[in-house]
Length: 272
Image: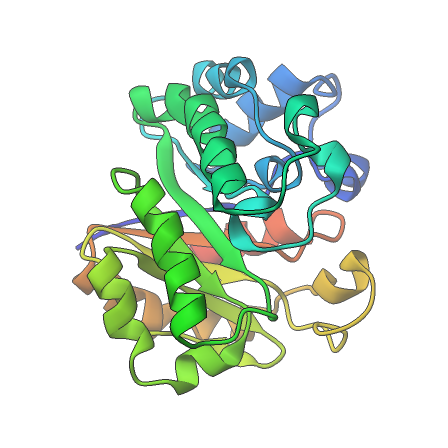
């Protein structure tokens, strides 16, 4: 039976900070993370999606969390084909063409920054979340394969935001061939549970069931309070995943006030 780790997609969201979930006196970065790590064994680090991380920052993340804690880290936007602001790139790379050579250099810096987490066993997986604009086909597969080849010795998980990927019968075998974990999702559109594609990890991201999932602001898209019944729908699925992998990660992304941490706590109680 796999270890089931539960956490949230971030621990510094402004809405969470305003919610009062953190105790008084836990306003600085160190105390927040140390407190979070007493409540959950897993967190998604989403800030590296918006800007390349710094090894000094990731070393502090490792230092402030206990052995056994895991960070699932989102890939930088340029590496997954998302629009990337020039200001998000290091100054010396801003004038370069957006090509494979640039992505290779960005990957080198991204990997170097995450080395402190991997070196002490805090890295759960890299999370490559691909945009809806990436439609399945040979060109898209080549793009994903190139990313995997750069990260050939790193744990690698893939979330496709275009549902057409799972209407194709070849996506599961494609990811198995890459040794890439297929990310399952919970959204308004339904419970997306692709086949298990690696024996070491299964990952589920709970995005909430907002009617604005496909449109609207970030807050509108992810505003949702999970009910116990909605969470209970996943219990048999999670147990099945735990029989097929060594570790299961459940991450809550319904980031409105303290909704994500409350849902994570509720799921932990249901599984217990």
